[in-house]
Amino acid sequence: MPHKGLKIAKSMKLFSDALEVMPGGASSNARLWQTAQFCPIYTPCTIFAKRAYGANIWDVDGNKYIDYRLGFGPIILGHSYPAVSEALHREERKGTVYALDNELELKVSERIIDMVPSAEMVRFSVTGTEATMHAIRLARAYTGKDVILKFEGHFHGDHDYLLYSTSPPYTTRKRPYAQSAGIPKAIDRLVKVETFNNFDAIEKTVKENHRRLAAIILEPIMGNAAGIMPKPGYLKFLKELCDDYDVLLIFDEVKTGFRVARGGAQELFGVRPNISTIGKAMSNGYPISAIVGEEDIMQHFGPGPHKVTHGGTYASNPVSLTAADATLNILKNREVYGRLYRYGEKLMKGISAILEEQDVQAVVQGHPTMFQYVPTDRKEIHNYRELGNSAGMELYAKIQYWLLTKGVMLDEDSQECWYTCLAHSSRNDLKPTLDAFRFAVERAKNSKFKATRFKLPQNTA
Ligand SMILES: Cc1ncc(COP(=O)(O)O)c(C=O)c1O
Image (cartoon, rainbow, N blue to C red; front, side, top):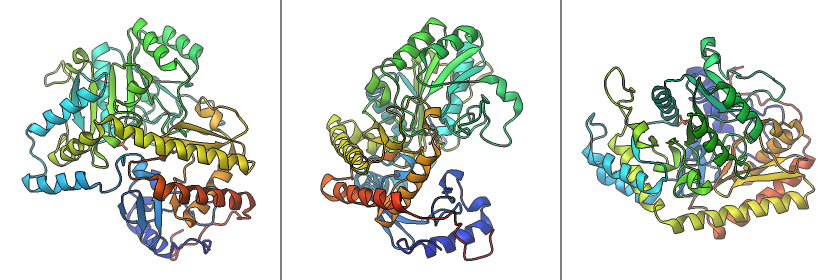
């Protein structure tokens, strides 16, 4: 049975009903918590959300949590942020989809061009998946080459072309490693996978393959692998390497865009990619993404047999654009980022101090707006393989469970990050979070959970 510290009966009932109508009981595999072997509540299953406001999220059992998942990163201002909600209420009666250009498209494009250093032109899509899919099509058309190089542990969405080696078993040597059934084998030869932060390996691969290599795509900060940072100079090195060999550099800033800085990771690290993809924080939680880049490359989008197809019924719909316009209107002010950083820095420091005081060896890494702690005896972590450590994962899973019992929601997947938003406040959230974290670490170290699977209320096994 689930531990009595956490009320989840309604969630579990809904989840068992969900299993009847949705494969796996969810609309996204990423929402299914899977650490069944470590904690008493997971089957895999998911908690059912009821509502979210500011820095908080409530579930159907009435539990209130300080939310550090923030929808996997989009919420940068706070849930249901008033200025965004009000803009939407004002605009909602004007229609939701036009299949025509609209003025907001121009306004939001101009905002992006003003804020993102490498953005000379903009195309809108709906999801990050669509954005990276179109970005690599654009790179292939522009260069006339087919192969795309990506890094292990970097995630670029769900389409077949890049769903490789995003979280392979730590023991596998296979590269590229297809992360889903159903990906045509024929695509394997269009993908090269390298180890992040290894200067020599990438140089060798680019030298040997540049005639077939259209682009290198990467997450400048590894938002899907516990916030691993680039080594100093690594992103600049990649840009120079790409320039030397006529390969395009694509920053996938779906997570870092408008989050780690006003101009994203490219502003933070001072490196200009040729193409970037942005999503999530751009609209504080509404479905919109953008492909941005240098004008001569972007001009390849357009109709006709020699141009690059890009479109979508909901691309640049006025609802998402309204949310993006209202969100960027706030994020354009640099001081907002100072506030965001200060909270995240205090949180990272507090977490480090507690882990040290509790004798848990760990690395706390990433950026104050998206970071993670990794129980490990390493001093630093530079790539996906160095994350591999099952003892650390067990401790992480237990800590996550005990945090939930104290009203702090962190993702169950240790490769996700803690996300912070403007609604997190030092006055209301910092102490409760750190108190909960200290409690969770203490309990996790001494928890005697067996590898029990929570039994669902109905026969759904
Ligand atoms: C870096 C990155 N790129 C692309 C995607 C895909 O975005 P979406 O889920 O909106 O399709 C994600 C999703 O988390 C991501 O983290």
